[in-house]
Length: 479
Image (tube, rainbow, N blue to C red):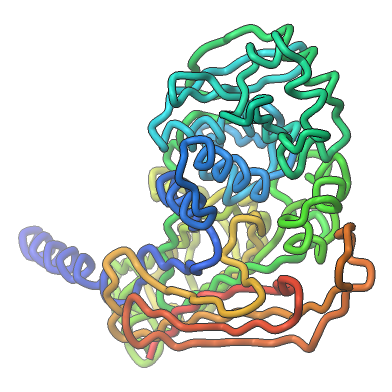
């Protein structure tokens, strides 16, 4: 009898391995031709350079710097409890904020991905980096928001050059050699010069403070299971942030937006830069084969719209996201014992239907153990993400591409992508980007059912300024 059960277990495992590709969409990604794909360091560098049309190394470095200036803001260090950590991709995609050493660890990772050596350089009360290319060190600062061309405009200056000739900074705005957003949060040129004069080369390091030099045990890839939907919104929910303490919000209000002709029109709709929330819903329908295929079943099968046990049975519902949960709750119908794992099944803790303590967790697995039948299961959670890293829309034509890791359509399920936005009309010839005089059209919703991969479609956005984004949703619905 034991041998018979072992044989059945092998068969069940084989069926499960086949089922894993049946209904899920692994690496469910949305990109556009006008935005940077923030899913990897390589894609960020490639898209930032492409969109800027950069040719020289200075131009490429500026493009990478400008991307990061647009994607993150300064507030505090993002921290997570061990064994979790915050690396460059997590900081960009989940949080969107950091202090000087953390921001410059991300910038350093991007420059290194481009193939350039970098070094940390310390100032009194400030951590910077320099990047080496064309035989020179160059200073870029995403925290103070500045870089400076030399007086002959031959290259972006390094800190030693600035220390020897302060006029590289002091006269930069007058001479047209400063970055477009130069010191937009209120720092002074004199402070930059003093910092460069006091510079101390720290050298290389595998991260700074709470930010690691590369991501550990984190992936931006979304494995969406049949019966699930992820809706990322541009608004914030009260107390909808995952860290402990004060709400994360740009320390300088809207200073970085008001005077930036690129960042301003994109971000003025939402007030000071802060966190964004989204909703994840997973409600598999046990009468649909694709939905059932994405559930890890032992000793049970789908029968009449229920999961029916043949003895001691279990069902594991797996919900792994690239965005951290803030809150979550689940419901179920059936006489079962439930347990929760937040480490992909390594450890389990008993739970009851209702609210779950999952703040700042990414991988939720819920196991139901039962001897009768389980007729329903659903989970709804709020997640945190960085709106600045999403594939938002611009005015005019936007080519949107939907893809997965293997670009194979999930069997038995329908992939859906939805954009929700409002077209924007803004005053002409304005110099301040603070939302004044801006009007919005009616809410527009564009939904596409995907019939091939990769799948590209166009969204034509009217108005004379980038639209107000409301949401992007990805869903996988069992047929």
